[in-house]
Amino acid sequence: MYFDDLKIGMMVDISSAVIEKEKMLAFARDYDNIPLHTDEEYAKATPFGKLIAPGVMSFMSVWARYLEVDFFGEELLAGKSTKIEWLKPVFADDVLTGKATITNLVKRNAKNGLVEVTIEAYNQDGVLVLTDVTEAIVKCRSR
Image 1 (cartoon, rainbow, N blue to C red):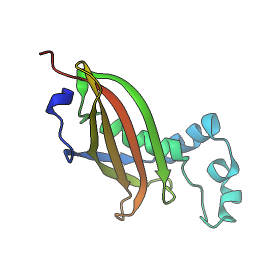
Image 2 (image 1 turned 30 degrees about the horizontal axis):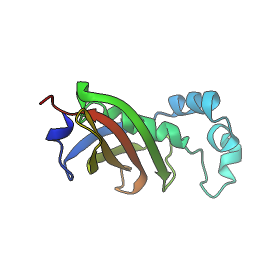
Image 3 (image 1 turned 90 degrees about the vertical axis):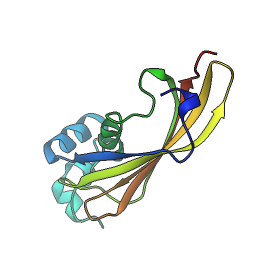
């Protein structure tokens, strides 16, 4: 979708992403190898009581589902930034769903604009576990 077609408040639902334990452990070993993500005995002694998923993995699981309903498609020129906030722990077998909302639009020039998309992800109990604000540069229609 072109920048000109987007409106603040447009929203899409994000389908479910399951945090599979084996994938969680493999991701943690490769990218976030700390005991809270990889050592079950250690994790039992923490306030969480069990392993938690790496935050980036939780976000990327939701992001992959967002891309299935992406606002921009071929009109995306580039990503500019992202800011993730992890609000609650995510555990193995959690099911994350969410929504993506356009929260800001700034026309940069005749060729493109900056679009802010805010993602909220919830676990299977309806608890908000993370938010993300991503900025993307999107094509304008040729006039």
